[in-house]
Structure formats: structure tokens, C-alpha cells
Image (tube, rainbow, N blue to C red; front, side, top):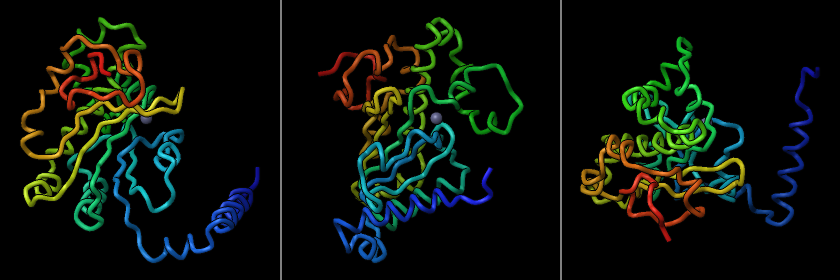
Length: 241
Ligand SMILES: [Zn+2]
């Protein structure tokens, strides 16, 4: 096994060459400033990289990733990223994008406990345990899909409750929160909702427990990608156009 990573450094040189071949000023522009319009909060999974799945260049999306895209309000990392994105970069959209077959959600659905990861996943585990009868009545693949989706809905709600987002809305800053889910199997993103743009929209949002209890089919089994939803009120359970 090689001790060095020359093959990766070689790929970096090739990538930089390709970038400047068609756009000689590309990196000089990057160096001058970054003005992304989007903050992406996604999973650390190596298959779900924001720039790639959105088809965006460097400089176009500010990114925070952790296992299962969880918004812990005691996590200095995510709070720092969020504050910088909202208050300094003044992004207009914050996207929580999880994915189907998320290993973190698989873990939360299992009865294995004791790893550091289980502390991290606690909000998901608590949601599952609270509604275990509902989830356990589902076929295993449906259960996993639904919990992947509901985790995203939960994290959007937690995001909307942070003082950083509340303050931005209170001072009239244009800021939209989105809940998306990516399917590794087809490379496509589905828009789950909720879409939140104000404190009143957040406060009128259906409680997560109601979403869990509402009869629903995972979006990947019911909708075309990016099907429009009913303003985030549905929990992904109805037919949309
Ligand atoms: Zn994941």
C-alpha cells in the first residue's frame, strides 16, 4: 500500500487544468470572493456530494455535512456554519438534503446501542421509539424510506427554530428553508417540503408527530422527482402533480 497519495494529487492537477482550459480566470475569480446563494446541510455519505448532485461549480454552494444531516442545536459546527451563511454570506436558501438508504437511519432503526454514533442519532432514535408501533407495522424497506424522509422534516423544523433563522426572518431577510431527499439509486432529488420562509409559516406547520401518524407512502414510491408538494404540509403522502 502506498504511503503517499500521489494519484489523488495528480487528479487534482488534471482537474485544475481542465477548469482553466475553458475559463482561464476561474480560480482568480474564486480567490476574490465566494457568493453562494445556497447553504446545503447534508449527510456525510460519500455518495451524496452537494456540488456534484446539483451540478454546481465551486463557489456556488456553502456546505455542512454530518452523519444523517442532523441539526443539533448544541453543535457549534453547524451553528457556526449557519450563522456565517445567513449573516455574512446572506444565502437565500438553506437546504436540508438527506438521502434514502442512509446508514445513520439504518442504525437508528436497529436495537444496537452504545457507540458514539448513537448519541449523535438520538433525535431520530427517539422519534422512532415514540412511534415504534406505527413504524414496525410497515414493511422494512418502507419503514427505512419513511424514517429517512421524516428525519429531514424534523431537521427542517429544528433549523427553523434556531435563533439564527428566527432573527433573519424577524429582520426581514429573504431566507427559504427546504427539505429534500436524494436517491442514490437514480441520482435524483425529491422535494419533500416543508418550504418555510417566515416565522408564521413555521408556526403553522403541522407537528412532526402528526406527519408520522398520517397514512403515507414514501415519496420515492409515490412521486416523480421534485413533484410539487402542498407547501410542506403533507409529509409526502399525497399525489402531487
Ligand atoms: Zn446518510
